[in-house]
Length: 94
Image 1 (spheres, helix red, strand yellow):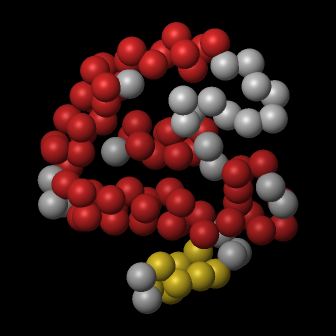
Image 2: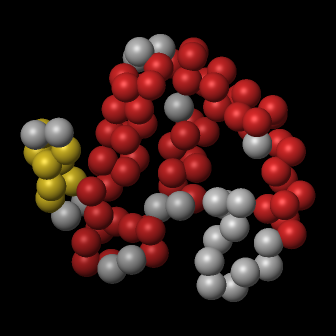
């Protein structure tokens, strides 16, 4: 859970946005019919929903999948990511 939260925070656009929205905490919305705010959805609700939808609420299965993706499926792509020199777009899709 920490890794998922940390990676989400690294990519959290709300941390460098407008000061007056308090990192998305003042942006109210509905997440699957529940009242929430954008920061909470980004920080935890997306992960919780993914655990339910893709891993049958099994945290160990989610952790194993993340570890497998990092050490097996994605590890061969590291050099390609490092070689990306694009200034306008990311190269993650490669």
